[in-house]
Amino acid sequence: MTVKVLSACLGFLSGMISLVMTSFFDEKETNRLFEGATRFLSLRDQVELVRLQPNLTEKQAFEALKKLRTDYEKYSAEYDRFILRPSAMWRH
Image 1 (cartoon, one colour):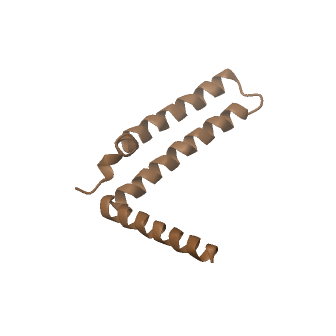
Image 2 (cartoon, helix red, strand yellow):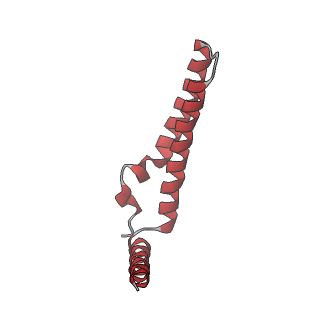
Image 3 (tube, rainbow, N blue to C red):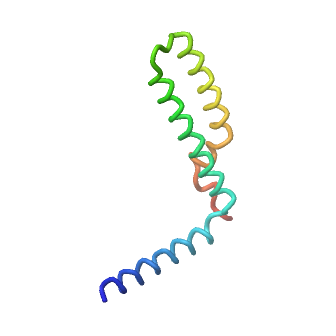
């Protein structure tokens, strides 16, 4: 009995969250937010891979950092409006 009540409550909660998301947030903009988050996560992973490379010279590290910095600036220009101002995703 307890499991059925818990399942019903979770189902109701899930429905309410879906209703709020579809009512207040534009799906296209939400997808862009997740896309941006994925790109920034990828950059973080790339930094970690560079950091863990054995026998990495100072010059190689600088070149890798320069490329990652360029990618960061590109992603920042493209996605900051979604990440820094989530209200930009709201339907008006």
